[in-house]
Structure formats: structure tokens, C-alpha cells
Image (tube, one colour):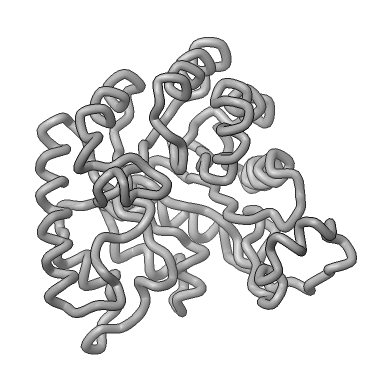
Length: 282
């Protein structure tokens, strides 16, 4: 049975301010039982908080995020280069099976030679993680749908990294110009993790957004394409999920990149509730 998970990136500032335990406690209160850890430092303090939340609320980690840059260059996630052993130890403690890259390897605006070189390094980490019983997964955005010699970069990377898994994000597939429920069929057997966020064409109701939020995020309101809670946008979510079942997808991971002033926990709860109404719940 597929499990509903949430992605922690949206709460990175709350974790910095209040600690991982308090955030995971609130997540448990909105029925978020499975969490993909992203944009969270793997400090002793944060891991201790997650460990405590696991014990008290039953919240489980299902994936950890890594980066293929050195530690000093990795802005959001721990470095596979410098913090490999630490990531493996945490994965083993929490029975995590997946290490995922939040962005694709390679300079996606560069040459084929550059992409090939970075995919070679990716394959090395696929093998290195496999030695510890772990799988490496790659998460896409819309930019991987740029074309190089007539082919999408995501398709080139898929061919060059045949043993890597793909954490396809249906919003970004739509924005890249493809139909999510059709495009994900390319990744049969390589799609254990699927990112769900809906695709809304919104009226920019600036009168409903706090002024301080508008001042800090002016560019968010110049484009009517918005991230939306699952079930609140234009994607055929039920069809997408039913197709994903045939491909071996284990986790449906809700990710909300922006909530446009709406309470973050309420936003995730709406997605969880909407999925339950569709017949998908933990």
C-alpha cells in the first residue's frame, strides 16, 4: 500500500527557530506520519529532536536529502562528499532506504560532456550507497526539460544513470510541458518516490496577502502559475496516483514550495485531507 508523506523543506526556518521536535510534533497533529527530510541540518540537536518525535508520536523518516557538492558549497543539504558516513549512519538508525538529491547532478545549462561527467560521479555514489543497502534518487524541476541536441536533459540523465531512481515531481513535469500521468510511465520500477503538488492558475489576489509577505516576495505575484495544495489545482491527481501504483511507487510525498501567506501546517493538512477524500490515506 502506498504511504502518504510530507517534505520538510517548507519548515526549514521553523526548525531553525523552534527545533525539529516542536515542528515534528505539529506535523504529527495534522496526521503527517512520514517525512522526507530536506533543507534540515543533520546536527546532533536536530537528529535528537527527530528521534524523540519518532518515539513519542510515531513520525518516521522515509528519505534523507544529500548534495553532490562539498560541504562549504552545499547550501541546503548535507554533502555526500564530506558527510557520507553521517548520512549512512542516520539512514540506518531510522531505517531509511533512500538518499535523494534535491536538484539534478550536472550543469543543466552546460554541455553534454559536462552532464556526462557529473552523471559518472552520480553513478559512483549509486554504487557506494548500494553497498550500505541504500538507493540514490534524483528529484527534478522544470529546468531539466530544457533540450540538448533535441532531447530533454532529464531523459539524457535517465539513460546515463540507469541504476539511479527518480523522484518525479508532477508540478514540474507539467510546467516542463509534459503530461504527468503519461510522462511518469518512463520510470517504471524507478519511481519509489513521487512528489505531489498541484498546479494552479491563480488570480493574484494581492488584497488577501499580508503586506510584509508581499514586500519580501515581490516576484511571487507576477506569475499566475502557483503551487497548490493537492486537489486544489488543475492536475488529474487521482489518475496520476493510479498510474503510479502500476509503476511500483511506494511513497506519495506532498511538497508545498510556497503557501503565499497561508499557514504552512494548514496547507499541508488540506493536501492530506484532500488525498483522504480521494481514497488515499495512511
